[in-house]
Length: 212
Image (cartoon, rainbow, N blue to C red; front, side):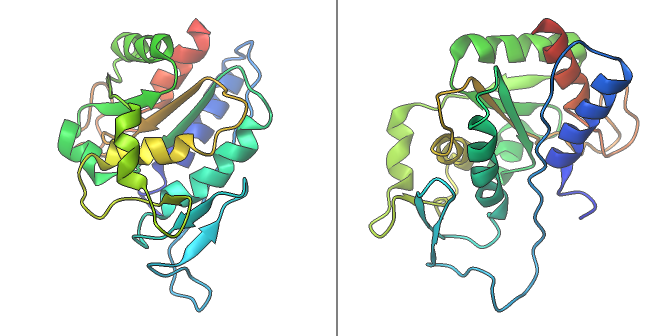
């Protein structure tokens, strides 16, 4: 994995930067790492997989593995009852379609937290756009054979459906933000970063930690 691992790279980058700056915060950093390989044990379309929290998932698309690994990771992390849980992932093509490569998208379960996330983006130069995640999107993930579909094959609003999917695996109603890194790669660089691979999320994450 050289590029499509930006979520874990950002999480690790925030941890390293916060440590180097000796920020007075406690951080648990979970790396949800997967790599697609052909294998007799690999899941297939239409399989049903049981997640760590017991939720059954109907597999719709074998390349939507990121949300599958994040599901169990969010369950594990939320069981620790953190004050704030943030996940980062290059999760959906629909977010890149919605925003292009100069903004990333953020969704979450607290309106005030979303506003804070957008403000931190303006202050750090790593801009975020907040998206809705209302209940009436949920039917897009209804399954006749499992508790939930992994995704919809329609492609419509997949960035929102992906966040609705991930929300099902949170426990204890912890404050949560999901950052879909559509700007992890921007041709010609972004802001003060001159390389195509931008590292988007580290500067924003540090700003969020300082505010918290």
